[in-house]
Length: 363
Image 1 (cartoon, rainbow, N blue to C red):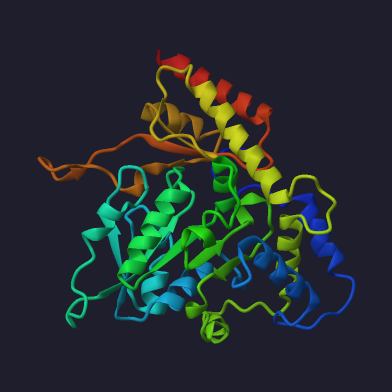
Image 2: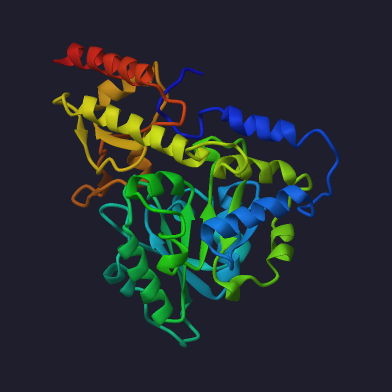
């Protein structure tokens, strides 16, 4: 497959991560997380998120999100999220099937919830015919590449807690957000009042495996059994753990931790791509470029031709605007380009050159 801009899941694995896995492959170790590697990495999570933080390694982001939701909710509860949220659009109904709860979605212009948007669903408490709002879930950075400030996260946490609810953060790209905001992981999670977190690394150089991080001790109840029932308990868990050890930079003698180095690079490549696009009159960037994604509106025939050489997603799946006079969806012609930890300036330049050649044909 040609190196492109389809997804930060398309890139390979960091050499440092592969080396960490190989180093853990020399001796036997206890299974299911009862090994020295998992113990060390558990301490690293506490160092980054606070002493109360408890980490549960899972196979993927869906597992992390669902385990967190299961910690917060029962089947009669509801989770409030943006309409574009990954748990609503790209989990194939996993929260509803496994937890049994309801998702209450909110249309947004930029992928971000606000207290005012959330409040429209804060009713029916104690009414037995109504799914009970129990949690708010946000994504940092969002599915549209936008960012919550620390203050915005805290405002949502305060709102949730005032209604005896919880706040969950889907942090599949939390490293990119931390770099963009210039803050620590703890500052925009634990210190902002977040109750639980899906902390990912696969999109930033890891091989596989994500983590559910419980920040509120009230939620840390019987989750090891629930993880097992969800099919998310890895027997050779040390190979998940050592990836995060390399990711955090422990014992690597690195001046810049791997998570930061990779996220800084992918964010920087997106800025280079964005600056190149600004000089193309037919291309219109539709969301702020804050992390490693660029959303662009282009003539359809151009991006469809470009897809012959480069794979990327058209973003109409995120919900098309409706022409209610004709009752049909109106194409937006918006595409998403993602940069990865291994994207190069040459990749960007070649991509922009290919785009300009196709634009020249229709000019």
